[in-house]
Length: 110
Image (tube, rainbow, N blue to C red; front, side, top):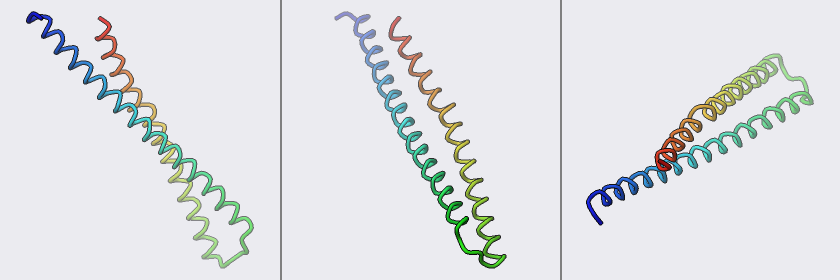
């Protein structure tokens, strides 16, 4: 194997290593996204359950009612923020990694 072939093979090995690294990063981000989506679904169902329970709960003092209402509003706000974060994460981080991986693949195909 001459010097040029050896350098080409080293470059190819380096690119393959980078490709595997990026694919692992993509899989990690996908798993993180799936975990966040599951957590979001859990929070949504918890929020719906709390609303349902509050509808059937006996009327307590005004202070208790206000506390429950505040808690419900806080939970809904947290849910909204979490949902926005999941969407933002899905829109940017994962797509960026996929584009980077595509550029590595395009380089390999040359």
